[in-house]
Length: 78
Image (cartoon, rainbow, N blue to C red; front, side, top):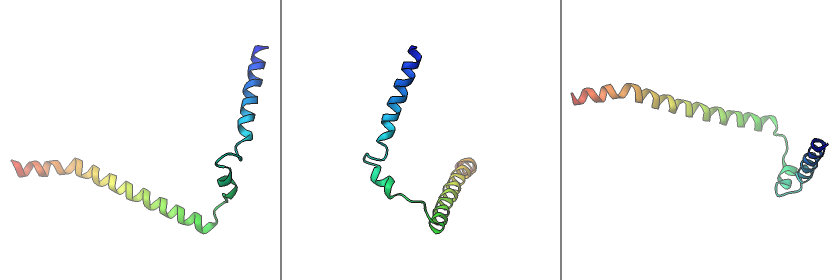
């Protein structure tokens, strides 16, 4: 019986928390939110894709310089 009471208490607490989801400080934002149209979605995908490519290229450049530049620098000092 103790497990049933504990389960009911957890369920009651969860239901009380879920009642206030649309009424708190984020409720207005959730009410204003809408699904993006096709053009907005395309633009977001393009911007995110460009960001991924730029960050990937920068990471590859750093990797390349880190692995292949030290022998050239060392050859100048020997």
